[in-house]
Length: 100
Image (cartoon, one colour):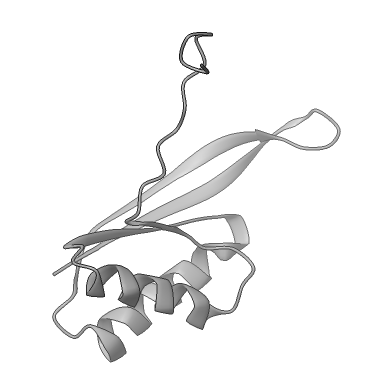
C-alpha cells in the first residue's frame, strides 16, 4: 500500500548499530549478538557527541569479546540537520565497519 503511493519504505538492516544515549554495554551486546548470529560484518554508526562512544564500543567488541574482529573501514562525514528554530546546523558522523 505504501509503495503504491510512491512512498519508499526503508529496510531495517540487521547489521547496523546506531549508538546514542544508552550505556556502552548495550551496544556491545548488540554487536556481539550480531556476530553470534552469523553476520560477518557490522556497522557501528553515530552522530555528534556519541562519536566517542561509538569508538569505545568498537574497541570493546574488538579487544574483549570478538578477538578475531578487525576494523575494516572508518568513514567520517557531516550531516546538515535542522534544529528547533529551523536553522541548518552541521553534525559530524562516523561509521565504523567491523568484520571477521
